[in-house]
Length: 116
Image (tube, rainbow, N blue to C red; front, side, top):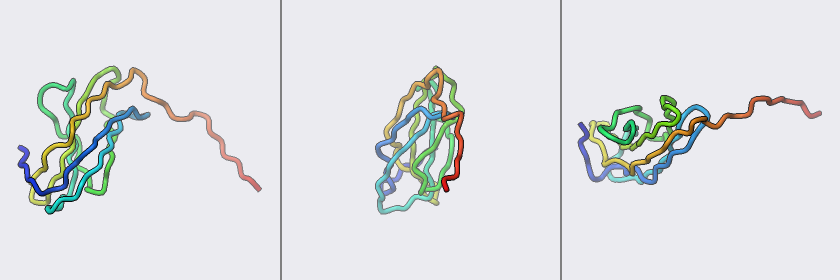
């Protein structure tokens, strides 16, 4: 159960993008009067039903890659800030993203050469 407190960090401007190993989430925050100790990442399969907790991250972390996604599926995510007391902020904006059928791949043939 999420307990909301008003004077906490507020997570704002969350975005999602395709990444080689899943969907990368990025967010920003504003500092409030009550400090938070972690960010909580939640996902909602098919953007219906309840959000499910995915990760608890240190407050200095502003990105998370969800690698447990299925290509062609749509998901929604939100992030909250949690105080050491267990209180949780209001959720960020909800980000909806349809995972591409093929996730972008990184380079496959790299070589290193020493330059004298």
